[in-house]
Length: 397
Ligand code: F3S
Image (cartoon, rainbow, N blue to C red; front, side, top):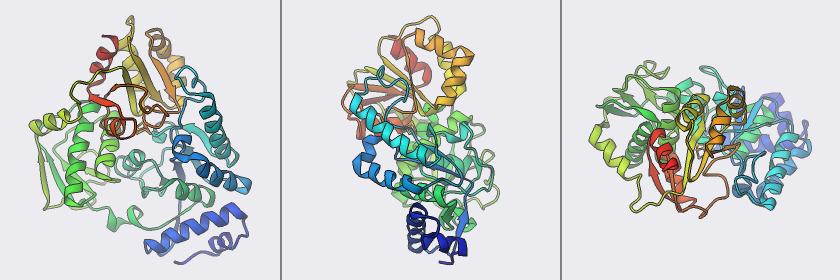
């Protein structure tokens, strides 16, 4: 791999230990994937922030990097294991909170902006078309590559941090034009609406891609999609299919840059959607937990929730998971007051998947196909998907 003299100096330790370790990580990655050089990145999103996932070993790595490491580019964090202000109300224990704060403090010492959100593109870490970035949250990676047209591989926590400290990433994979072509043609033969339905579509396409051993769908037949629907779709197709990039005719910016694939046709109709939706509703579920905001809720979704909850009372644990800056806008607009008066709780900085709540509830209702996957696999809950309206109805039942 060709390194510039600055990159070689980093590797030789002339910029300190953290930069050296970072360049070692990135050049090893580059060698594995046959990158010819590094490319500069304009922003980084680091995942693997919850102490639940990191443990002491992860924290030790971060503390070492924080001894002399400083980020060179705009860097934000994925959700942590707790709301940093409201953790007691959400039932998080004191020891966990202490350890979670040690993790966040290590990132802060390196100059990372400690907004903990999986939708950095909604709160200011927003690349533009064609920019190279190094992001690690799978749903955000898919959104950045597909909806924005920025360029990133699916980074791991350590490689994203290494890119933040050096401002570089190896130039391979989705950074290169030749790897961004659609591989599978997906024809959607029905109208779609809502975050839940776009999540179900992501599951169908993701499952099919795994069967075919392919990664990049080229989707036709969808005439409109909101930001919220696309973020839900991205989270789902990334979870079920490992997809980091898709093209959607008439919607995403690169759909006419690459040819429409002529083979591997998948057709999807209303019946397929209904069948896939039924797979995201467990038999005999007793819902005692409702959570909206996977990926993190936008201000538009919070406004909608406040409208639906106005003057009502929830009878179940009900979380709205979102980024802290979005929560602050909701506070100023008066939405938080209405929502909290109804008994629902904000869980900013965290989510129903990364918080340490395994086994705490019997059944979770969500509007997100990704949350269904991890609700079952990680937290051992029964799951039920529905629209935001369905979720609210369940909560106030
Ligand atoms: Fe975000 Fe947590 Fe869902 S990180 S995409 S809200 S699982």
